[in-house]
Image (cartoon, rainbow, N blue to C red; front, side, top):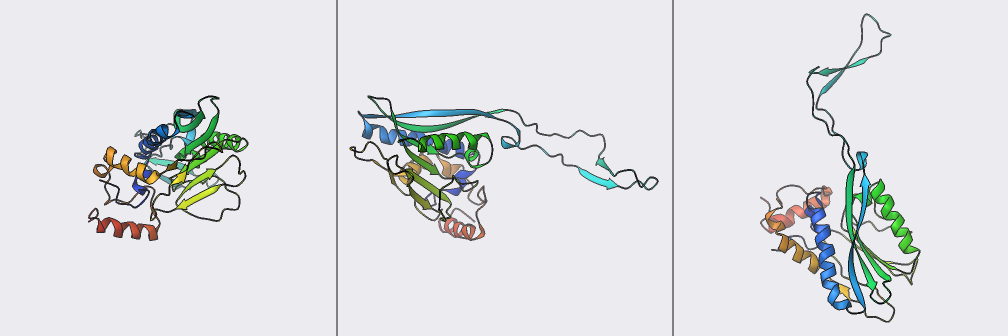
Length: 262
């Protein structure tokens, strides 16, 4: 069963689903491209690893208690103090601990020279918020953009800060950037919303080689069906992250029309 949405399913941006979607899309793109690129190129699945800690990785738990500020009538100069209620009962809190983050990405390598011709990146939530994940990715992005390597950057997440693009006033839910090494600083931006089909895009290679077209919507539909997300997602609930009021009304009508919402 395919997703009820025509393009990206916003329910799959939920933190419980996105890591699986991220890895499955990486795998399916590699499977799709590999037979088309042989024998000159190979598709390599790479993993970027780093450690994060603090609020950027784990939210700090806040005790569910009532805090009252009381003035001391006998000693007005005494500062107000926090009184916990109940005063001696322990509460469960969350302590931020180091977390190992793994982010998969693809590299198209020339077999003979082992040169990386094209890098394909799917943005993760950690890439779109401040912290080590964004810092490391921005450094890698800048390195790629300073070389002749082609960059394909796929952003299927509404939350967070998009990667910088000079002079771009287009606002959209999702973006695919195809930035050719021989056209810097120009790039091709595919901007689209939840109402749109995910656009297909060409895979740039060597100047003399034909460019395969990646039908990301087809691959996404296959993943949704194979993984059985239709049996896991409750479309009666709101998506996480939430949609805007206008988009939520559109999604509500769509889901009701498909019999997925009461």
